[in-house]
Length: 82
Image (cartoon, rainbow, N blue to C red; front, side):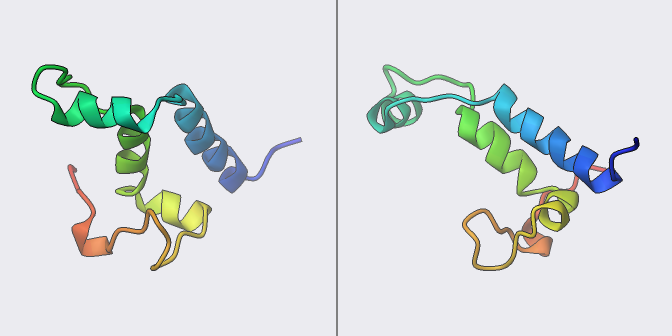
């Protein structure tokens, strides 16, 4: 039995999100990104997921993300590399 292509593509995004799943206290995240003594050059896990997904057109279609949703980014503001 073949699974619909859209279902497989949704699973890709869900697996990607679970790969970076993390729990941390808001103050720790703030200190890690703002405090010069505790600064870390690596992106927070949520930014690795939300930043990538919100720049991918397929993600908007698969998860029915619309203007006004928290992670919505206008088409002309999405990053295009290729």
